[in-house]
Length: 315
Image (cartoon, rainbow, N blue to C red; front, top):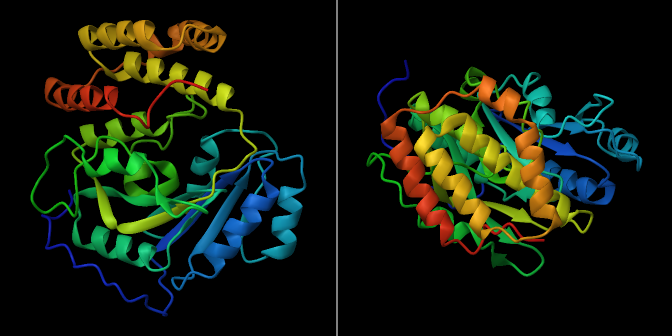
């Protein structure tokens, strides 16, 4: 069992120059060579000098070869297929540090943030993960999702370093390696798209806490190599699968009905629901609803998300 929480350290605004070996950065990528090389350059320049592990999800644009040539210090994994978010699971198997910082190929961490995240996690043994704010590049504006993190409706213990969260953003989160492993990492059934919600719920049901920490920052220069419609399909499908996997019957039916009424009435939504229904045999076979106390927190989050401008099943 973790020890009782200690006092959270105040953020150190000065960027320290000494390396910090407490955190490994994990990146998954596919066919985004230019973006990934930029991100790896940013990570290599961090004062913490973290070990970086990249899982190349079967890129066809020479990504892996470019990484091996330009960043020989990076641990490069080439599973030979596209395992989606499970590429992070593969990378975490190679992690020997207490903390893992997830990073997308088009995001990077602010200097000093990894050190501060490790300080916070060192001081709070009941805290599983800390999520950073996101700055959109090149504009320098705050990502709209940050307001949702900052205004989280969940309550938590006073020792939390920021608002309590019910989920997290994989591209902007540092997590305990042992906590990640204890819940099995990202679920193989979801593949990719909103996969954090299920992992976060399984952490919460084990008694862990998640928190947004305003002193932490990541930067996001959104890749143009993305299919927004495909992302919407898998995102909606995975929302339904998570709902049927972990929500009690009444809330699951209510949320499904709400989504049926409110998502765009188009081919993409139809495909998402069709894929979700096709997966019902394995989903119902693994169904494990949360207890009422945690369901109350999930319902509180669901209500807040309905008003969010950052969560729309459009594209």
